[in-house]
Image (tube, rainbow, N blue to C red; front, side):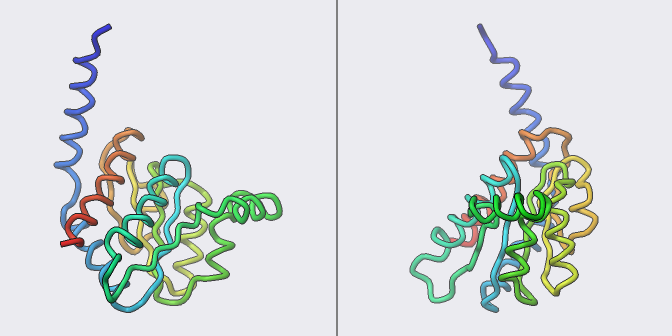
Length: 185
């Protein structure tokens, strides 16, 4: 079977979407992250499904890739990496609480909280961002589709303007590597 046409269609949609992303929003995100590093703030990041994988990847790239061997380092914590803690909150309080619980424990005023949600409507991400907003953190969303509730409640958002989960997730990962590549120089 020959899928060349379908491959080309996907790649073309990906390229068109890259061109539509606000470069200014990415630039502002980079400034926010650099200020957090300089101020010694913790960056909490989270997502579900593919977005959880992206959140984990951000942690690796910022904690090691950008920080290794430097005097000042990023301090990223991925809220979806501790499965036993997530399951304890899910079992005892409900799945919507899996990210809020650890924030109650560790988040300080002025920390950053990043929620990754393709739809922008993941209830547990929205709830964690609302908690962060109410308790003195700075909130950032990485979204797709319309941006949903995450885009509306975050203090800063980088939006992938397409109604396609795979391309949204692709480009959230590209954001990580773009920022890492620039900040690593």
